Amino acid sequence: MRNLFRFIIRYYFFFLFLLLETVALLLVIQHQHYQRAWFASSANFVAGNFYRFSSSITDYFSLRRVNEQLAEENARLLQFTTESFLKTDRQVFTFRDTLYNRRFSYINAEVISNTVNRRNNYLTLNKGSRHGIKPDMGVITFNGVVGIVANVSENFSSVISFLHKDMQISARLKKNDYIGTLLWEGYHFREGTLAYIPTHVDMNPGDTLVTSGFSVIFPPDIFIGTISEVEIRRGDNFFTAKVELATDFNNLKYVQVVQDLMNEELQELEQQTQAGAR
Image (tube, rainbow, N blue to C red; front, side):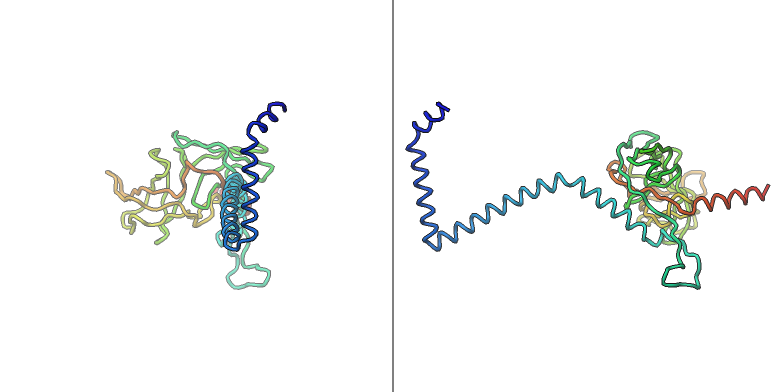
């Protein structure tokens, strides 16, 4: 405290000068219209830039919360897409919407672990059995297919990534509905391979590839990617095409886990059919 008083006494002329200058400026601003307008404009400019800067900082630190809200909203929107419903009767339609039965529902989850540089890659999600996730459920994003749930604990789940040597997905050329098998040959996390397309099929670079819907794992018409190159490999009777995947597996944060609400019914029917064929 003594040093503070010494400092003020030593430089009191400077502090007195600042005080008098401030008083003079206030008097000028209060009694001169031009100076008052200039000061108000300058103050608004400074305050506006300060608030914009502080708002940018606040927005940056709230990005996680905003992303979580967007992911939840995306999951809710997926519930109402036409691919999530099964048409059950072409002749009857009532106000209570008995024409369609819901087929798929979606559970939002966050990716907490992911690999892309191995031959067999996996993801870990922050939700598990207590959230309704079970093995063999499909995992997607709004950009495309991600993988299939392999194992589940109470609060977490492990997902076999599409970037896995054993992963195969039934895919369909959107323009002509021909079905092929999509797999990953281990070259790049943004590149897949489409196989078993007959050579008479019209398939060209730029064609769109979607899920076929011929399984209880993925809904139909989920965007997979686009054809980038078409070839016939030696000794093969089918087209083989390189596919530019829509999903960036190196930048996954939020995903949706697909729940087929009619899975048990379909499995029971298939078991009855197999038992009757024996």
